[in-house]
Length: 316
Length: 170
Image (cartoon, rainbow over all chains, first blue to last red; front, side, top):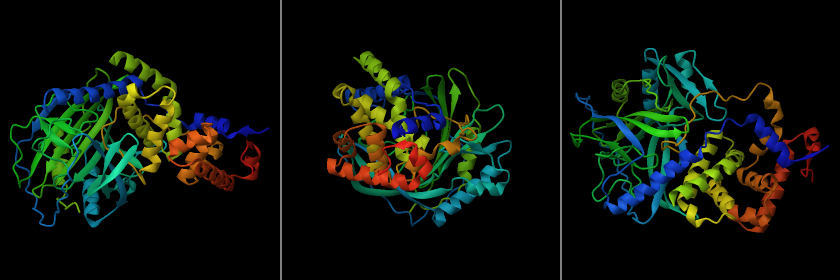
């Protein structure tokens, strides 16, 4: 007896499909926020309004971070002129390890393997399988930080069109995700990114309001009420603006409510601006049952210390 | 009219979201990428909801998924915070099922555009014209892609497996 392709594929997918995290209400809520942001941005003339999340604590960290050497080889990647009526997005391609990313990777794993009481796990993207390294050397198999070409695309109803603008980005990306775990704390995914000068701004550029979708560069946005799932403005309240040419670190905690029908997403992020203008962004994010509080797997100070420990390599 | 939009949209996601996720998985072979792509597609659909006719909503959404996973990207990635993000509640494939996924594995081993044509024509059971609209090519190109896709599929499968599958033999 033969069966058609469709029924065989359906049967096989039934056996291997992980539970679906797609939630209509959560997607609709995010979609509503996007619509609301657009309307508010129009009504308020660009005044920052983000309603997606509540910022629990926002801190411009005190103390004096170690000065990073200003690199005279850090090129700029200025954006082309953007059409305010259009939206833009990024596409990433051509991952490769470079001497700079290898330095970052080595420093990152050295620090992670030295964290006391924290287990570093690899989550396989394809199967969701979780594995823990048995030795520090096993960490070498975990996703390295690599260099990607970051291509700016114009977003249109029929697809996206290349604008020709390309800038490099270093990020931890591979076949799996890195998850940190500690008894009594929420498991959180670790994301590490390093942007070239101008790629992740300490403040909104002149004339750009929060949620302006024609501004596709992430930036810290003062006095916002929250952190949106789609918006590029990252809420923070910085009483001491970044000093040009000096190291500075910002820490943000956020909660995205109703990330799934039963859970909120808790996030902790530090942004370190190097003297050469580059931005290192380290984020921990994980799901916590709705209404519950959970201690992050690392404190903000520990995450900031991790950021301080990574080298100021040029992003080229 | 937001409540009405939400109700209609949620009904659509409940009814079609899983099928879209599986379609995206067959296109890219990675459940997380598939979920990211479908989520992105559904958010774009939400924005466009009042303008999309119910008769074309599936094609509209599948086209976005194809654009994200195939047409535009050699390798597309997502860095934004996700609406949903499944952390490590393990979803490893149950023991022993690996041997039973031969057709899906075979599909995932053929070139992505051929695969998309085969999936749309023979899994989604779409016409040549509907497939052409989603892939953004001519009907002739769809026929060519489908034929080459089936041929590539045959090369991946053993005779005993081929014998159980209707319509794959030349």
